[in-house]
Structures are given as structure tokens and as C-alpha cells.
Image (cartoon, rainbow, N blue to C red; front, side, top):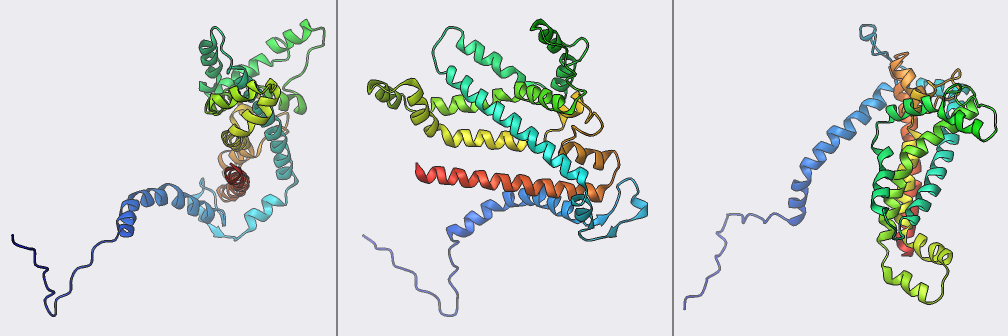
Amino acid sequence: MRQAIPMAATPGKKIPKAVSDRTICGLFMLPALAILILMVAYPFISLLYYSTLNFSILNPAKGSEFIGLDNYIRLLSRDSIWERFIFTGQFVLATVVVQFLLGVAVAYAFQRNFRGRDLLFTVAMLPMMLCPIVVGFLWRYMFNSEWGVMNYLVTLLGFEKIDWLGVPTNALWAVVIADAWMWTPFVILLATAAFRGIPTDINEAAEIDGASPFFRFTRVTLPMSMPILLIAFLLRLIDAFKQSDLFFAMTGGGPGSDTETVAFRLGKIAFSHFYTGQASAFAVIILVIITGLSLIFVRLLTQQGRQD
């Protein structure tokens, strides 16, 4: 039997090195990296660049002037901008808490087996599939102070009609109700997935040991589904912070500018006044805030994962 004879290196000729796994991984990542740069990095760098210019997209012939951080200073020195941040914070806190509590409660109720459960669950998901601007106009008609169905229900209960959209505080809660109607199904969906991912034998063991339903919910169900619930909370928080469609359709930002969120004001600066430089700076500020909130929740998720 013939044995393979190792080839000896020819003097003066280099042996080509094998391509390492790390290099191959890098080559496979290049297309994804190129797409990431094109879709994320380039727009973000452009946004930063325009935020340092005195520039309007309506007057390109006028040119642009580099003004450094002046756009940021002008925006943050306005009391009206801080009022929009406070109003947006109130809206985000109210709507996310309402949606989260309601969504988790309804999802837990759907864990019981009852007739028509699947049909009811499907119907509950329908509001989430509608266009936000359509939902806004729908609720605007329902909250009409003269002939809206909400005031009809209020008068049936013996109370006087409420000016839902003409008073800032009432308008805030009207939009919170509309937003909760539309996006609570999203929390229900994720919470249901989290609850159904818990092994049934754990709950059965707790039930055999005599644990009450409240004890099983607070000590078993909630802790084990907390990572997914935190993700649902984070997604709703980010989306609520960017909310402008419902306010546009239901209140138009009024009365005055009392119900304008930061995203609504950003749209006015960019597309009503066409102050492109200021709008870019405002977008960067909002992006920094949302990124900060996201990092907080990512850290919470990391800590939760370590505890598990």
C-alpha cells in the first residue's frame, strides 16, 4: 500500500496561509454592514450635519450657514419646548400605565378556558390593525361635545356634557383613551405569549401546594414572564413618546398649542415652518432621550436575565 508523502516546501516559495474562520465571518458580515451604514449611519450623520446649519429646505438657493450648536441652544432655551416635553411625559406615563395594567389583566383572563375564547381574542386584536389617523378621526367624532356617543353615555349616567376636546386636561385623557383602545391589544398579545410560555407543571405544583390564584400570579406568573413584559413596556413607551397622529386627528394640537406633543411640534417646525436646521436639532434631542430610555430598559432586562 502506497503512503502519502508530505510535500516539502520548495525553497524560496511561500506557502499560502489558510483563510481563518474570523476572516470568513467578517466577509459574510460585509453585506449586512453595508446595509446598516446605508440605512442607519448615513441618515444619522446627515441629521447631525443639518442640525448645525441655519438652513431651510424651501430656500436651497439661499444656501446654508454653519452655526454650530445654536439650533440646540435656541430650542432648549424656549419655555414652549419644555412645556411640550412635560405634556408628552404626562401623556406617555398615563397611556403606558393604563395599557400595561389593562393588557396584563385581560391577557391573564384569557388564560382560562371558556367558550368563544379564541373568537374573543381575535376581536380584541382588531383595533391594533387599524390606521392611527383613522382611529383618531373615529374617536374625534365619538368625543364630539354636542352629538358624540361619549357625551350621550355621560348624560345617561346623570352627568352634564363634557367638553372633551376643548379643554387641555380633558383632551389629554380623551387621547389616552383612544390610544389605549388601539394599543392595549399589543400588550395583550405579548403578555399572552409570555404567560403561555410558562410550563404548566409549575402552576400545577403551586396549586397542589395550596397557593391562591393571587399568590400564583404575583409569585410565579409575573416574575417568569417579566422579560417579555418589560419588552412590551419599552416598545409602548417608545411609541407613545413619538405619538402625533392621534393628536393631529383629534385635537389638531389645540386648543392653541396645549396638546402638541414633541413629535407634533417637530412636524410643525419641519413641515409647516420649514426650519430644517432646527427640526434636525430637535430630532437629535428626541433621539437622545429615546435612546436613553431604551438603555435603561436594556439594563433592566440584562439584570433580569442574570437573576434567572
